[in-house]
Image (cartoon, rainbow, N blue to C red; front, side, top):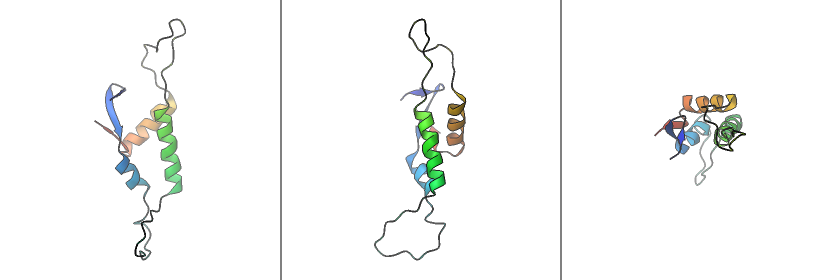
Length: 94
């Protein structure tokens, strides 16, 4: 596991799937033999963008030594994305 902000977190894929699923919202008669899943496209794109932001965060490199900066710095987009996913329980503390 890799520490994120001093703690271990994981992406709960089952919660992401349940969060995006809209199958229960529509009262259509289920057809026999179908395994169709309806998703909210807006939620899907937002969750995709938030996860991409969290997973692509990099520590700033110190120019003098070429080592990661000793400062505990995270960007505003990372903080917003991380806190949103944590609030919606799509990422959980391990």
